[in-house]
Amino acid sequence: MREYLPVILVAAVIGCFTVGFILAYLRLRRDEKDEQSDRSMSDKTIVLRLMGYAKPYWKQFVLVLVIMAVSIVYDLLSPALIGNIEELVKDEFVYSELLTKVLLYAGILVVSLTGMYFQTMILQKVGQKILSDLRLSVFSHIESLSHEQLNNIPVGKLVTRVTNDTNGISMMFTNVLVTLVKNIMVIFGVLGAMLVNNVAMTMVVLCFVPFVVLFTAIFQKFSRKAHRGVTDSRTELNTFLSENLSGIKITQIFNRQAQKMEQFQGFSKKLTGAKYQRMFVYGIFRPMVYLLHISCVLCLFYFGGRSALSGGQVLGQVITSGTIVTFYLYSSKFFDPIQTLSEHFDVLQSAFASAEKIFTVMDMQPQVVDEEDAIELEHIEGKIEFKDVWFAYVPDQWVLKGVSFTVEPRQTVAFVGSTGSGKTTILSLICRNYDIQKGQILIDGIDIRRIKIASLRRHFGQMLQDVFLFTGTIRSNILLRKEDVTDEAVWEACRYVNADGFISRLEKGLDDEVRERGSNFSAGQRQLLSFARTIVHQPSVMILDEATANIDTETEFLIQDSLEKMRSIGTMLVVAHRLSTIQHADNIILLSHGQIVEQGTHQQLLQQKGRYHQLYTLQYTKQQLQK
Ligand SMILES: Nc1ncnc2c1ncn2[C@@H]1O[C@H](COP(=O)(O)OP(=O)(O)OP(=O)(O)O)[C@@H](O)[C@H]1O
Ligand SMILES: [Mg+2]
Picture 1 (cartoon, rainbow, N blue to C red):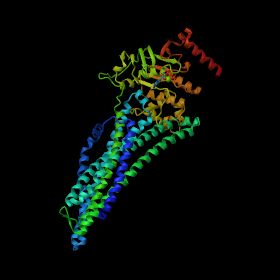
Picture 2: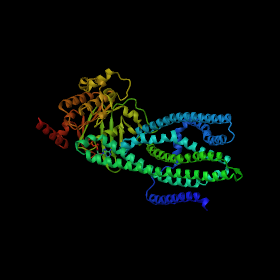
Picture 3: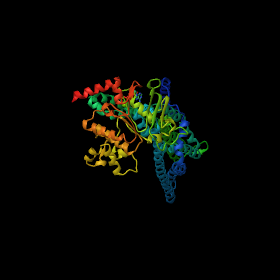
Picture 4: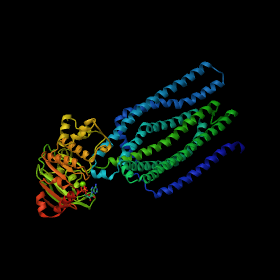
């Protein structure tokens, strides 16, 4: 009995841990029953779709597999070689033989290391290429989404999709996938090599395999949960950050820094907590596999040593000290890949989770798309008709209710009405930023749904209510990558819309820096720049959504003057908040709650003494009072 005491002790320790793990697992399963799974795609679907991105690089992957097969030889041969050397040193010592074996060992090592170097280089390169392809396709897909779809996804989430999630997948291609294959090959290879060397000793190692499998399977469950915790908290933090960094000035103005900080701390703590949990799971698993490994080594030493000392045979094979050394080394070659394998399975799982999130965005079908037989519009006259148009952003909450009007070519038509009455909505429908639910919108008598979107938008110059300027220079913001435009043409456009004055006063003129969202320019200047941008793109129909922001009288005059000039370019649709701007319009449409209540010229509407008259008198009196 006493001679089996060490083995009984080892068995007792492993048994205790096994029972503990199984109990913890049962508890986890009970908790998970209440949570719904957030994965809707199967692993197989995800793998197949991901493989689509790897397909163009299949030659490189085959090359890596070949290199890997060569470098595995080291893992398989080196323990046997070292065991051999051990025996050599013990028996009659032959120097030349020792030298040959050591050189052989060094040779295999060099080949294996060289192989590993090339393998890493090739994989990193391919991984980066796949990553770049993936990022590109996610970004271009996001670009094709309609305004409505974009309104529904927070920007922070999209940023996470394009950056973090694609990164998660790149890890899979650069590291995990190939190591996974390699480790599986090594595990089976080592098993084979052990069997060839000594069956009895292999049996000792195999006794531990069921425990390794059990521990790994349970670890899988825990680590998956921990990983999901980390990714979810990270997305939450990113979404919060991207929104709040954009609105940080408002936070400062309303002195809400402390409250925002508190919220941020909450998200940050949650992420830290999730990461701790993940570390905890790994912190338990790694020592456990190590415990199994060491127990296995102890048993190998114990049984191997006993047979070696008594000189007996086990299963017809003699065990020498060399065999013990060989198996000691094999056991680590066997357990190490098992440990990394399970951890890699985990990265694979989180890559799958990332991939699913990316594919969910990619699967969003663009809502506003060209019809199959959509036509190209080379030239337009500029006649616009709305025929009983009904539109809702949210189903059944009608924003436009049966709007009908006609704009003749080269006419200027103005939309007025209280805030939220649907003016901006009408303008964005003309350019098909959204599709209408009922009715028809016609350009030169053609339904806009029958015209290719790109060709439709090319003819419209949209100057939106909130002007968006990109980081760059004044020139880059005016051109927006339109290439065939000379500096002289840019200046001409600027002169046309009276933007030349302030630009020429800038130190670097057109090359002056524009910071994020054009924060270093005034609202009026931004508006003038957006006019210049539109003029350079030579549209046939101009659409202007006048900013509500207060601008100084001088800029207001400049804007009015440029509006007057722009009238001569083509059809013009204007949303005006200052009625003084639109007195010369050919038609003024007054909207209220998504319906047209009055229309006519300035004089006609004044004579009607209706809502427009009221509005005008109000603004006029206010102006007089200000003077
Ligand atoms: N993206 C959106 N999603 C849902 N509802 C929207 C969206 N944009 C606007 N709305 C709603 O549609 C209505 C009309 O909005 P619209 O922007 O056309 O008003 P507006 O006449 O341009 O107002 P303002 O003079 O303030 O610019 C509003 O009630 C608004 O709440
Ligand atoms: Mg508006």
